[in-house]
Amino acid sequence: MIFIDACLGKDTPYTPVWMMRQAGRYLPEYMAVRQQAGNFLNLCHSPELAAEVTLQPVDIVGVDAAIMFSDILVVPNEMGMKLDFVKGEGPVFEKPIKIKDNLDALLGGKEAADRLTYVYETIKITRQKLDKDKALIGFTGAPWTLATYMIEGQGTKTYNIVKKMMYRNPKLLHEVLSKVTEVVKHYLANQIRSGVNVVQIFDSWAAALEKDAYFEFSWKYIKDIVSYIKKEFPDTPIIVFPKGIGVYLEDIDGEFDVFGVDWGTPMEKAKEILGDKYVLQGNMEPCRLYSKSATKEAVEKISKVMQNRRHIFNLGHGILPDVPVENAKYFISLVKEVTKK
Image (cartoon, rainbow, N blue to C red; front, side, top):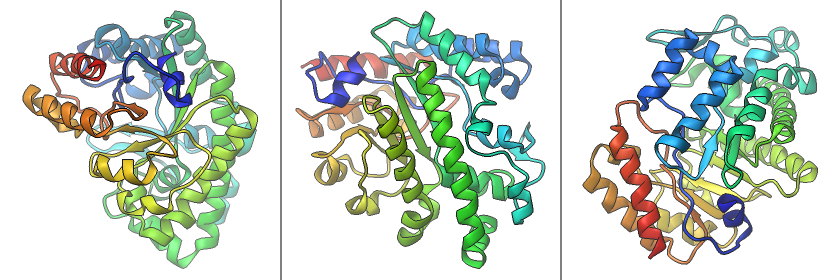
């Protein structure tokens, strides 16, 4: 597989390329399947339909790997937190964690992870239908990102509720993070057993924390998960993507294989600091996909920076729903053309 070869440092015919949140909102075919499912959560819980939308970007756009269709919040949902996707608001938990009793009422570890059967079935169906030379990527949210949703109750721009806990009751926050971490370990292990070739850990809200807090309340838990997976599955590549921590790169370490570079972090800087230790992934600004000329400019620049280095071409965050499909196809074909030279 091209992706596996890139991670292990083997020669590859070209730089592998895919797009974050690739099963997605920009494809009319995806919207048709979602309508068939009734709502987003139903789609996550329907393995046949979830496998269908997982495969769509591979078949339609031409990316080199499939990213399983799911959502990071199925983890706290199966721990026992009632989840709804509210129009105009996004994901909302009915009863956020406020006190230790709320946390103690939730399932943990393998018991919670084993409830995510629909995810594992999606993986099995997808792997059966996916070409053998294409990698299938599984994923999870990082404990900090998941805990933030669980404590805030929904998305946030201020993080004031979770940060209030962090400063007033850090012991409880660490207990939340520890419990989530144990679930995530088993969740990723089950994904690998079900057939994914690669796993990725998204820390979408990493930038909410100042440096010392980030390494205490987020990064150490990511490292714990990575160490567990590497011990159990030493040959499975692991990608980490902490968004918005470019100024902390000097202190990044761990047993993972690939570091996802967000669009706000200069690729030159990431290459200088981390390029000798890890494969780098990224980092085109997603909004460049609105313009073919802007896309071409970025692809050529990133390709030049990463010339003769192990690199996975990707966006520096998720693709947006109104990006023209034609532009997404152009991006993929351009990367393959430019990186072959």
